Image (cartoon, rainbow, N blue to C red; front, side):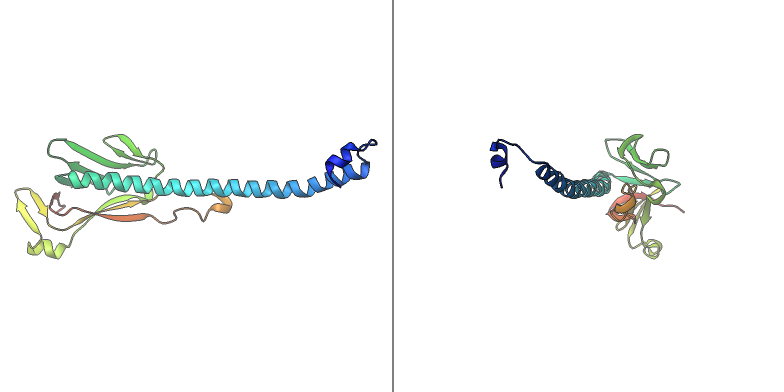
Length: 188
């Protein structure tokens, strides 16, 4: 029985037909709204996960670009800071700021929402090679390193909570940026 046929009848819709339609709506609408809410929650959690990936990717790309064009790399007293010296551009200091969970270059925020307690800069080189002088060229107080890496460790803040908590970066992302043939100030 179609709705058009029911509406054409002179006596209208019966109470049983109205109850039947209301019952069907009461069964179907909660299922549809549940599916829509689940889809919306999944969209939000996937968006936050992709945003976490973007944070890490942007930081790595910016840092790689600066390290490639830097002439000298100076490591700060803590593993939260590194200074890159360029020929004509001056210096750039990269710093993980724990006050607002950001990565800053010369005080300007370039990446937000970073778990600073699990993010760091480290230098890696083979001490035995350096002592033998195989991979090091001395030039007064500066050393040119033929092989070595700046290890950038970044951990984005976990933004997914409750049922989508497993859609977070739970471990820090570690990448090695080559500092081959760069002047490095080594700690004594």
